[in-house]
Length: 451
Ligand SMILES: Cc1cc2nc3c(=O)[nH]c(=O)nc-3n(C[C@H](O)[C@H](O)[C@H](O)COP(=O)(O)OP(=O)(O)OC[C@H]3O[C@@H](n4cnc5c(N)ncnc54)[C@H](O)[C@@H]3O)c2cc1C
Ligand SMILES: NC(=O)c1ccc[n+]([C@@H]2O[C@H](COP(=O)([O-])OP(=O)(O)OC[C@H]3O[C@@H](n4cnc5c(N)ncnc54)[C@H](O)[C@@H]3O)[C@@H](O)[C@H]2O)c1
Image 1 (cartoon, rainbow, N blue to C red):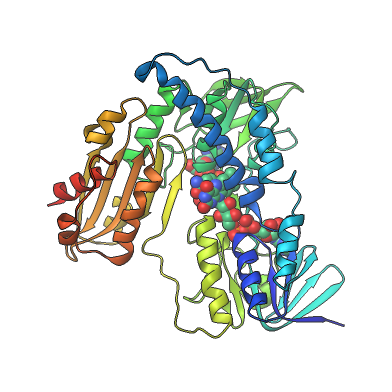
Image 2: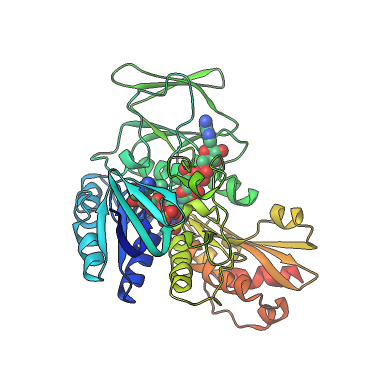
């Protein structure tokens, strides 16, 4: 006989966990189904452990800047404290007991296993059947995509999941993919002494961001000694028991480790979405403004295709949970989706890129200011590379997109996110007071240039 609950949450990623707890606290009976770890990719294999690596790697880079600014500092990189932090503070050695207890304390019931949707109100986990009285909420996220490169399958390559479990920095590393995962890990390991090569198939790294951001980060990485090759897809991979060999662009590269960071994949077929009459060959599911993919079935997070970020998953969780609880007014808005790639310099961006704005037929004006030309950037000196780029819709007199790359670029982004979100008139941005000497004063410079 089917076990019943008001709401069944499939996949307890950041958004699933949050929505499930909200709904349980509101008094609904909630079953959360998770096949691996409650909390999902972000705390155990993604955001948190990688940002711990970045924090440590950046401290090494900052110490190396002492020579330019304040005398001398010797650094002796040691990966052991990072590995220890990731195990003990971030992941409890990949144990989710604390998260499970938190969910149960909120009133939820956790079921371990792989769930499959079998109908608009029914879910199967192995031999067990579940029936949802009110809703099914899907938050199953993504897995690393592994390209079909000859020789790759069967080798002991890393994805982000193995990379964050490293106990030492490898002597050498080849990174396939110059997106956020590849670059954050490439720069971190390099700062610990790893010899790093990045192979990006397209003609620039960070291809989803502004070309100026791609050029900036490529420049900085190369100056730090990373070998960054764009327009360079791996043709074959080999492993001799000790090291990897990668053929790319007619040349052979060798390294102790290989990191595959070439994007993510979803399997809507295995999730059973055909039972809802949905097309399971797609890479994402189509949601309505309340995150419904069918009557009474909600989807949130990476699988919705609105940005594979924890903040998106959490944002959508709030809207879906509210709708399940009867709030039919609050709807998802996506005109100001912020994102930050935590390289040094950080690349923050919100809304549309210039190319996206032009493709939408907007009447576009752009302006760029250089962080080193700002007073704060000039004072900062070492490690001051960065830009502010604004993308305006001149018909409406508002910003539709912006990039904030530089030291604390992700933090400076906040005011630009607010401006895009609130559609603040450019005239008002011109009239506001920007504190001196901050990095965000470079925004004022760019706003003036737009005029
Ligand atoms: C290396 C790395 C670094 C990242 N850094 C950042 C960052 O700094 N900032 C940021 O915002 N984002 C970052 N991300 C992205 C972020 O991790 C994801 O966007 C975030 O985890 C939200 O994903 P999600 O909610 O869709 O679900 P996920 O976190 O992917 O969780 C989905 C859960 O569902 C479970 N599941 C899947 N299928 C089933 C099933 N059939 N039955 C039961 N359970 C199932 C999985 O086991 C998993 O626990 C990073 C990602 C990576 C890989
Ligand atoms: N700071 C953050 O918020 C953060 C950090 C990491 C990941 N994420 C999220 O996780 C998702 C996955 O990140 P990702 O970096 O794996 O994916 P991505 O899609 O951002 O980048 C993958 C890169 O690999 C390249 N590529 C694809 N196939 C290749 C091949 N065979 N050889 C060489 N290059 C190849 C692509 O052109 C692309 O540039 C992203 O969508 C991102 O939103 C976010």
